[in-house]
Image 1 (cartoon, rainbow over the protein chains, first blue to last red):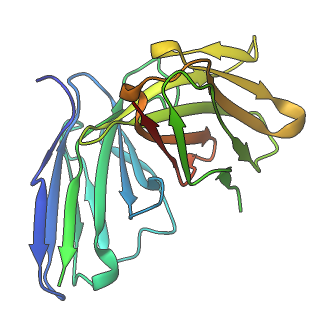
Image 2 (cartoon, helix red, strand yellow; image 1 turned 120 degrees about the vertical axis):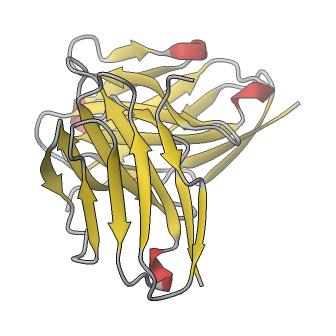
Length: 115
Length: 109
């Protein structure tokens, strides 16, 4: 499978714990995006990387959230001191050079449940 | 704040019926417009896109959408739906990279 992969697929954690998610984009896709999706809503943009540079961060991305893409390939999204309101599906998407922004390939998502 | 609205939360149709899903956005500048679809248990995938030129764009699986700049709309259409079109449909606008809340389509066999 050469699509976008995300791990883990499901994560259950207790409030206050830290969690980290991983996204592996499609090979040679230089742009990588993180979104959050809650039930009944569309994806909400969190942050965007072009290669290893984090070029844009949404105001939704509080200081408890941090994302990295150290070598311009895979990316991690960490949530510190999780809160129940962080429960959501976290989606990763990637896009190739020459494609428009929002012309993205999505992964299956990581579903986070904070108890 | 820029927003994308989708008129219907849930649409139920019988097979062979025609489909139109509404999408309106509030951003006033030049935009790129997209429709994404999420079939049950599957990833979001791009259905069609509009950047410029002919405002009527065709996508996969017989879907098309019309961009009407004066109405800030980008409605999705299909002349005859099939049971396999049952899915959630999301309209998206860039900039500023905003998705609508989605419309769930249920097609009855």
